[in-house]
Amino acid sequence: MRDLNKVQIIGRLIDVPAMRFAGSGDPIARFRVEVQRPTQGGNATELFRCKAWGGLAEAMAQHGEADTRLYVEGRLQTERWTDQRSGQPREMFVINVARVLFLSRPNGAPSPDIEDEDVPF
Image (cartoon, rainbow, N blue to C red):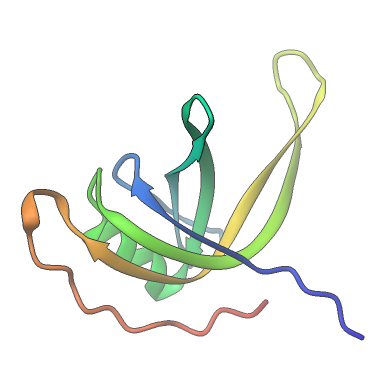
């Protein structure tokens, strides 16, 4: 039996994706997606940090707008680093994105057609 690391979320893009380039020159886009789920007292909000590479990163930077509703699929990855101020080890979970579908746009604008990019898991 094989192990599986797969994440699927549907939510709203919190802000415009931040794009930078890796040392190899590959584009990387980081963005956050807010997902709400009903609870007995109302709604609970979860915030997911996401990272896209290559053509998918460029598409996110070009088409990603705050409040866009989207579907994100990928794998969960732990990023670890040492805090420069305190010297303490830190970690956070990030979705390493393999696929994004734009479901709706702010103000009813049409959703772009973006082809999936093969991202190795």
